[in-house]
Amino acid sequence: MSQARNPATNRAMNWAMNRAIGRISLAQRSLARLAAAALLALITQAGSINAQTLIDESGPALRARVVLDPAASVEPGLAGFLREEAEATVALYRDIAREDAAAAQASGASFAPYSVEITDRVTLLTPDYASVLRRIAITANAGPVVLVEALTTDRRSGAFLRLDAFLGGPDGRAALRALASHLTREIVARYHGGAPTPDWTREIRAATRPDLAVLQNFTLAAAPTDRDLIGAFSFHFAPGVVAPPSAGPVDIAVPINILRAGLKPELAARVLPP
Image (cartoon, rainbow, N blue to C red; front, side):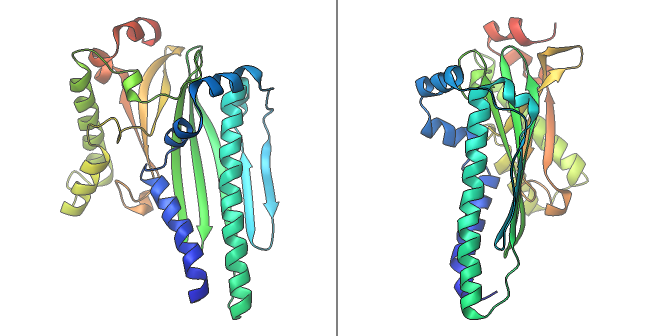
């Protein structure tokens, strides 16, 4: 790798890894950029977005592909936001790839096109909620990076939701601790044979700390008996965050019964299985 290409590549990889560990999630950026009123206006005014391959390009510097989940098109505002985020991600890497390609040409170094592939999967769609999991696979000079970004919205208000939209009351904190403990146990058992190294123990504890600001990369899953009810909260971690990179993305489902006692009472009666 030539020295001329390092700054841009480092910026790209730093940006990617920051997102991978949850510092710049979809929900965080949406809250910063879209006020609730603006989002509501978008949802009510935007036209429908058909399921499609949004981007499919193969240029000398970048190969990019973006595929939207057909189910997201029923919520025009959410689909529009997802489309905007995908386009912004591809545009960022297009600029970086062109800059690195030009630097490589100027220095006489070889350059292989970068690639970005973005795919969305709607994990839950009920009258109350929409949950989407986005996978971003990036290949650049620093090697492949896979990110997983989760987003849950309230379909009635258009608001982006954190765990505190669901947990509340006197048992809310206890439920949050129970959730964190479940995540830790499952990760240790599935990916570390029950005995993680001291380094992995620190990483797992940091990523599963019972803190609303930490445990925000989640989607909702439907109850097996009724698709309009919540059966689990699924938490998503990028490769290398809580397990070796070779394990790939880590998804841990937390059954709703673990959180039931800490859910807001007005919520429990409406969206939970009996």
